[in-house]
Length: 151
Image 1 (cartoon, rainbow, N blue to C red):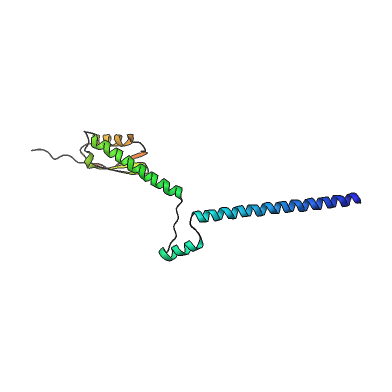
Image 2: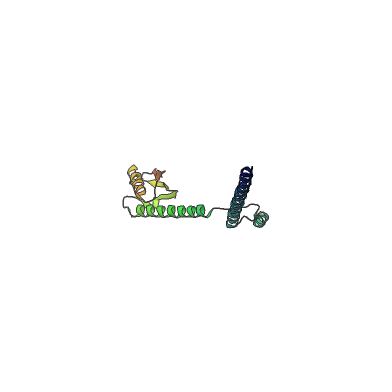
């Protein structure tokens, strides 16, 4: 009987300690989760007062992740560099009229437009564009315009 009472006392204390320990861990995890959410709300300026102020001012609330915005800026910069590099190659190539060829780059896709005097010029322009760094694809909408016949 004494042994059973001792076992009961030990197990009930152990059970209480385990339950208290589990409760402490749950409260700690919940506090950590709340703190993490609060930090993200602060980082994104999503406090209720800021939201109300923006809604009153513009009727909408817009937030962008800094990484995504930074990536978009980097992509636009890379596209501009690619366009400039191709345009420079076209202008210095003596067989092509770089002034009559327009270059546009979006996400590594280059579009060449304008007019040239032969299919060979389209091929040369596309080759120059394909050789540029950062180019994934080249699309040509260039038209062949024959030079007027000389009299």
